[in-house]
Image (tube, rainbow, N blue to C red):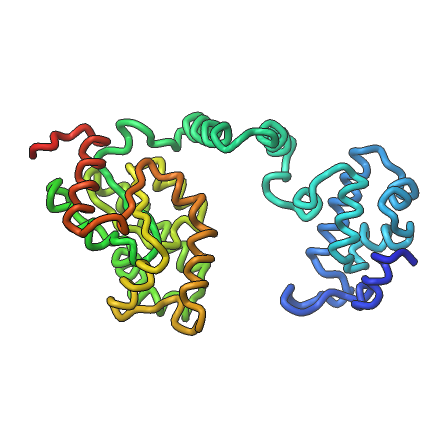
Length: 317
């Protein structure tokens, strides 16, 4: 028995799948494992590889590979990595990621594989334009969206900016609560993060549809949903309000709201990790302003200048 197979056996890998994956049918085959096995067989057929040869190259027994292909064996991640390597494909393709679900998807992935960040951005914009979903240019209207972590100043600066521009001020969190009929915290507690993201997307779509002019303060986690964030980038001039982690935490505490860090003794460290995980997405914004560098009045004047210049509005208004 190969080492990876031994690990599978120690974990009860040859038994039916159970646990968080859902109820196992009477035949003992979990639907996910059956679909995984079908993908392995299809990839092996596409490569023209006999099972014996693939098992040899993957370093597993032919019986173990056969069990995998027929949805019997619950293979370890190490076995799947070995099989993917032997099939010269990504683990995502083996697991059925949507971006591997058709030849066109696979060819697009191949085209993008070697691109740098700027190349990927240009490709995203070109794809959006080709599909009629990119809102760059006139389709953006005069919408301004402020992004960043809680405590960056989105609500305070957003309200000031909206008054200065003569635009409606929209706090997207309030729109989400209006649609759901309950608070953001209740949505999360009662229905979970997936339902919250659906309300968030719907609220954003409604604001974009109904308002050609607006200053929008977005929830800090909106960038966690690539679809919603792309929608925002395409239809709004976006501004990332940056701040030092210490300032984020101080401002949130001053508001009497420590969500989502209230239960953590390492609140500052948690916040730093959240910021590090989201920074690359926030950085996609059109404009960036450091709200820790100056006073509120000076920060607002800097934001006003940035936005008015970007929208080609007079500074003297």
